[in-house]
Image (cartoon, rainbow, N blue to C red; front, top):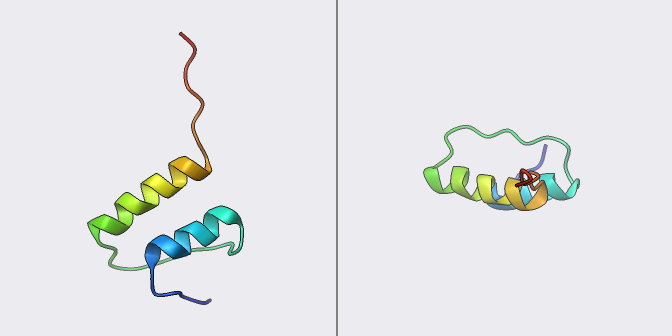
Length: 50
């Protein structure tokens, strides 16, 4: 497993399919926030009709 040093960058690589797994201990609040934004942009949820 290879780490870039940036949780946000690692999540981007996971979203692009470059890596198949991501695991990290002790993430900061900014890492969770970046992960949520990246996941939403990479895999948008369908909007409910109406």
